[in-house]
Amino acid sequence: MANMTVFGAQWGDEGKGKIVDLLGSEVACVVRYQGGNNAGHTVIVNGQKTVLHVIPSGILHDGTLCIIGNGVVLDPFVFLEELENLRLKNIDTSPKRLFVSPKTQLIMPYHKVLDSARESMKSAKGKIGTTGRGIGPCYEDKMARIGVRAGDLNDKELIRQKIETALIEKNILFKNLYHVDEMDVDAVYKEVMAVADKLLPYVQDTTAIFYELKKQGKSCLFEGAQGVMLDIDHGTYPYVTSSNTICSNAGVGAGVPNEFITEHIAIVKAYTTRVGAGPFPTELFDDTGKYLQQKGGEFGATTGRTRRCGWFDACVLRECYRICKPTTFALTKLDVLGGLDEIKICVAYTLNGKEIAVPPSSAADFANVQPVYETLPGWKEDISSCLTYEELPENAKKYVARLEELIGVEAGFVSVGPDRNQTIRR
Ligand code: GDP
Ligand code: IMO
Ligand code: MG
Image (cartoon, rainbow, N blue to C red; front, side, top):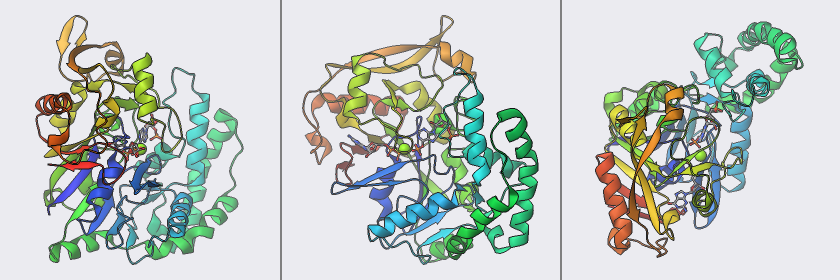
């Protein structure tokens, strides 16, 4: 099997966790390469649900190694809590199969305070609706070259110095701009060092592991978080997350050459959802929107927020194809569309009277586009127990075929329910 990425094609929550878990038994290793615990990846096996935030979604397969790459921002407290929850389910979380790159940036307590303080201060219109997990501030410190990395935990003096440096600036902001309590260097140092010994056994040269697996002819899966439209460069800026979510970031965020990764599986929800603020041309505010939200269980796996729902948007997928060139895609949640009389697909936008095929780069223009819809007939049958493509109702097949035509590549997987086994492979 080739090395592959599995990444979100829309605004996140496409069902990446489910597909990564499904393929997790067929690869030697699953690697997270960006994002942090803003992600919530749900895996359901025989009705048993596990939500993973930072630990790769391959963890449920005993023999599969899991790596948290250098491109991830890791909250050590959340990592240890997630480990504990998995241990309680008898899942092997030992440092023999789970590794963290020494170059991985750590989310520090002050990053979370800064994230929330900033969002609270913004007017309702200016809010991004972040997850409040400290993601943006942690990536800022990485780029400002004052971040704390997992490998730094070996050097107590360095950690103390870095916390001190970071807090000089941040305390000025906390006190004078955001009017929240200043943070004490000693207290933060103690809090972080209290978990250092638990985290350090996991810290290893993760690039070396990849090369060892390659030598043995084994393959790796690179698990993306969020989705193309939340990418810091290519998404609906500024309503995006703070990392490159597209599949081409896998090599950078995992510390391996991109040329080794030849398969790119885009995860595509059969309709569209978005959590947080920002433009969403096909959003539905009517009963159909509520139907998708209820039937699809569209509540955030991380913050519990209600996800905004709307029709499938082919312009978003055209952008995904232009930038990522997926080799195939997994269509998820097709079952949720069952029961509707008609299903709409947005095939283009109009902006100031002109038709356009891909999202405009400006958020203001994006907020003003009008979707151009095509309407397809729906189906009434429950498809959640279909095991083959042939069993799908004709209208469901027509819908999939039209999406394939619009996306420009064939669907390798059609997911008809949340459980691992509710997946049709073609
Ligand atoms: P991720 O962030 O991309 O991993 O997606 P989430 O886990 O946040 O959200 C996807 C949700 O849809 C989860 O609750 C999954 O259990 C569920 N899900 C995944 N695939 C399907 C499917 O084909 N049908 C249905 N009904 N639910 C699905
Ligand atoms: P998964 O991996 C959906 C959204 C937030 C917010 C914006 C910025 O489960 O698909 P951040 O905390 O990252 O600074 O928030 O990005 N967001 C997600 N939306 N799924 C996710 O992850 C998300 N991670 C971040 O709601 O709008
Ligand atoms: Mg999610």
